Amino acid sequence: MTVERNITLPPEQQEIKEACRALVKAYGGQDAAATRLGTRQQRISDCCSTSTDAFLRIDEIAVLEAETVGYPGHPHVTAVLARQRLRELVPTPAIAATGRDLLMLFARQSKGNSELAEAVLNAHDDDHVDYHEAVMIETAADQVLSTILAIRAEARMIAREHRS
Image: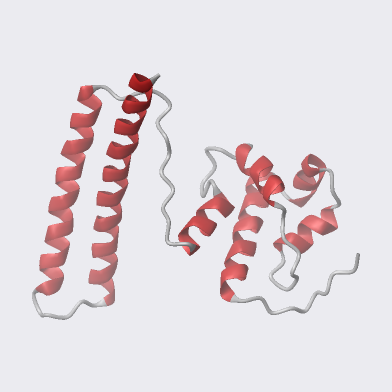
């Protein structure tokens, strides 16, 4: 199969290619990924190149992501696909939370809400939100979202255990 090597992909597909490249690098490189997936190194190279339309299959991504848990950026490709669809990934807790765990998360949530309110108030001083203020607001909002999603995940885990 001949792969054309001078294609210009749309930005969304280029971002997926960059995530594939990061995933392959986290796994140990193109040779290691090719060996694990039972394919040629050149195919892995094509799947990581932004100038070809070859992509890793979903089952191949699943294998590599399952074996790179804990590496920075994990899950590389899944996170990009979720973000492109305006979704957030939330890790599911391995064990059910206790009341104390939920209380600690609630305390972190309260702190995050305070930081978000402070960032919005600081940005609102001059009725203009500049780049740095927007980044501060986004960071504070991400912290609030992360914590509230963790609380929800913990509560769902408790509910699941009680249904069983």
